[in-house]
Length: 398
Image 1 (cartoon, rainbow, N blue to C red):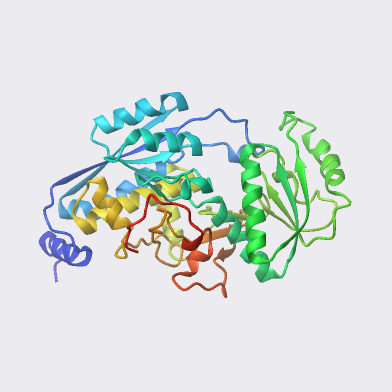
Image 2 (cartoon, one colour; image 1 turned 60 degrees about the vertical axis):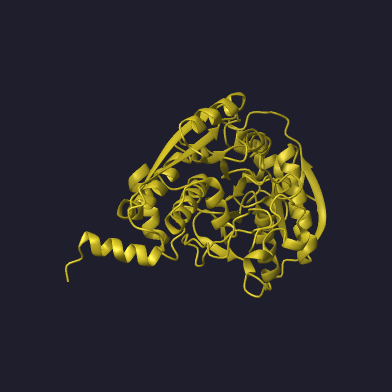
């Protein structure tokens, strides 16, 4: 039987539950806030110029696959500005009829943008991981597609429990974000019964990270820094500032595995992931961008697909309708992770499995088998409803 356009439209309308010929123009945008950061330890980690933007382009292509058949046109604008120009850039995007805005920013800037945006704009947090933004400092006009630090920490701790590595040596950096990550690891260790046998702070002295003799200095420095630690099963690094963690594997005094910011890492995505149809997804992105997909690309893609799914299912594009549907029991999103993704209605956080990788393979995926929850095993990652102090989402229905 020949599949005509009208028949295909009817099938899509029946499947997606949205009216045909909607004639909607859905303006979305990515606002990327640029910060001056030191060069990464490895040149392999240098950020590409289209970081995040490429994920948004792929998401728009996916949205258009369905949208073109039901009369919905998805468009995307991008802005990349320094923090001091963030509010003005948001105003410009809003003036261009973009009220669904994906934000790539640090915690403080995201909070300020949420306050500035007002109720007629819905922001999608693609990079800020601060737990406070999901609790006391939560905003009703922000949905979080990036996991919190607590979710990432719990993903690692569950694996340690499964491996019966119950003694942890915690090394954390001297930057504020390192301290926040260390706090997340401590809380998670207590939650899952992991014993933090010792802690040490690696102070960033501001020296050159990449020099001709760098590996020689590290080979001497790290063993001395880590010697005489109490008996432990694993070294856990909290180094969001990317100062020292990459040097820990093979250099620690005792022969122990490394996890956290190096070694076994908890991520939303990595370029070696192949399960659940991910290989085809990876190839599509690589054809589009000419490079492997990074976490930021995946997180922006997720936000774009949340918008596409909500518009397609509801036939509406206003922020209040998108937010209400995303937080409802009807919403779910396929994302190449083996199960559907949904939002927590108490704080706007997207539930999702966390990949554990050594950068070459997917070592495991959390939540681990055996970690049960009355609602969803995904709620064993991060703060659960009874622990939440977010009040901006009270009254949601999930």
